[in-house]
Length: 173
Image 1 (cartoon, one colour):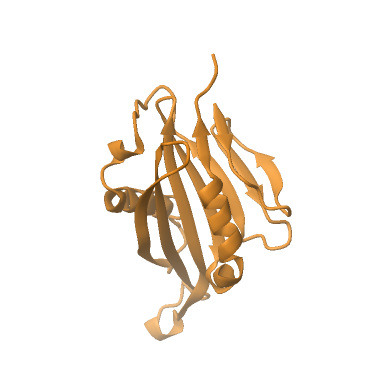
Image 2 (cartoon, rainbow, N blue to C red):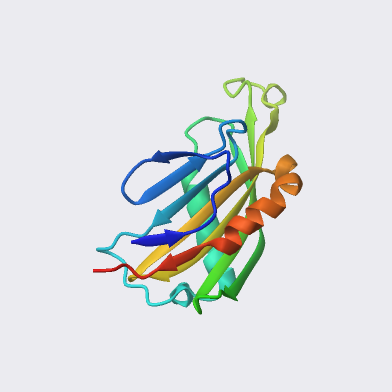
């Protein structure tokens, strides 16, 4: 397995499962970067286009995010939007999909209240999620970037630079 991308200088690396690499900004904990890999035993991707057109891939990415953010807490609600879905051919000749979504989470600070007027939901968080999807070695690689929506404009140039630098490389036997 080989992956190539620029990492922000402030990131600290965490290694979880073998299939995930994770970097978090130690100063803004809502900013992070990870790379997810599909299972080698259950994936036979030849190209990112095996996912369908970019919009369909974006719907799958959004569905995966929402599944990961499911909550068992009462009174939690998520609002989500696909902001963009596109494809690009990088300098390595491979097609990559880029997906941008926004997810807002609302929660009540009194979820067990009997009266609806006592269960007021407030914005808990509002985040921008950026993904780059690429295929190599019959596996799907997904670069994931997360930023609080209120900081996105300030961080956008750096985030886009990381996205544009993402490449998957053929593994050497």
